[in-house]
Image (cartoon, rainbow, N blue to C red):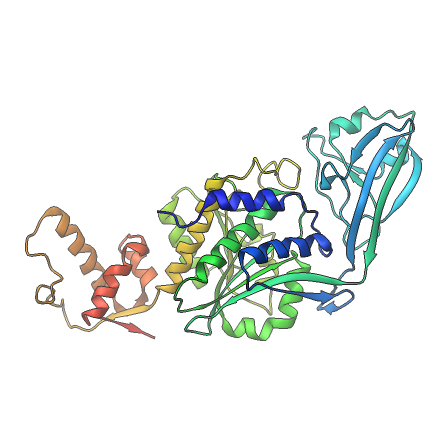
Length: 428
C-alpha cells in the first residue's frame, strides 16, 4: 500500500500552478509560504540582493504587476494575467507604441509548436519581451502599430529559499534538493517541490538513523549560493543525496548519475529502479542539466544523483505552456514519492554484513529452518543461505541484494532476524 496520497499532492500542484515564480521575487516567497503549511518547521531564509556567491551575484527581486500587447485599435493580443509565461521572465518596464517589425524583435515563439507559449528568461541582462503562440504571432498585422506595456520593477531584497532539517541518530545526512524558480509549469517545476514536501513530511514521522535535509531554492544561483555558505558542513556530513525534478508524469522512469557515478546514491537508486522498472532509461553525466551541476562540481564533489521521469529537455512539452496540470498525474506524483522513499530506505537499511560462523550455521536450532520442506520453503531458505554466503565483511546489503538477484526491501526483515539470532553482525 502506498503511504502517499496522490490526490492531495495533485491539489498542491493546482494551488501552486498560478503563482509567477522567478529567481527572486514575491512569487517565490508565496510558494515557500504554501510549502510551510505542509512542513510547518520549514525555515524560510534569503540571500540579500547584490551578495557575491563565488563567481555570481544575487540579483534584485523582480516584481511584475501587469503586461499586455494591444494593436493600435485597442484589440488585446496577449495578457500576462491570462498566463504568466507570456512575459519574458525578468523583463524591464516598457510602455510604447511600436511598429510590427520592432515588436517582432521582442517576441518569442516556437514554430514547431504553434499553440504553445515558450518559457524564456533574461535574468542577468536588461531586456524585455513577450512569449506568444506562433499561430498568434503569424496573424499579427504587419501594417499596424502595437502598444506594448510591461509594469515591472527591480527591488533590492532577498533571494528566498526554504530549508527543513530532520535530525536522526547520526549527524551524517541524506540531502534532497528541488527548485522553486519557474512560473506555471507542472512537471519541470511543481512536481519537484511537491514530491520533496511529501517526502519531508513522511520522513519527519520516522525513527531515522540518518539525518535529512530538504532544500527548496531557485535553480543554479540558489544552489550556488547555498553551497557557498554551507560547503564545509555539506562535504563533511552528506553521504547521499538527490535532485528532485521532473517527477510528475506517469511515463517511464529515468536516471541521471552523479559525476562520480559510483556513489552510495547511485548504487541505491540504480538498484531500486532496476527492481521497479527494468526499462528505465539511464542517462550519462554529460546529459546533466539541473542543480546536480553545482552539487557535483569540482571542489564540491557531493554524491548527488537524480531520479527522474520524463527528463528535462527530453519531452516536447518542456519549457512551454503545454507542461501544464494535464501533463502530470496523481499516480505519477505518488509513485515518484514512493520510489524516492524506497531509495532512501535502501540507504537507511544498508550496512556491511559478516557471518559469525565458519561454514554454515545450524539454523534449525534457532527456529530459522522450516520443519517441513516444500518448494516454497526451499526458496525462502535459499535466499537466506545466499545472503549468509555473501556476508563476508566486504559486501553491504545492497551489494548482496544485487548478487542474489533480490530487491533489497525483501531482505530487511530477514536481515533483522539474522542479526537478532547473532548469525550475522553489522560492520561499522
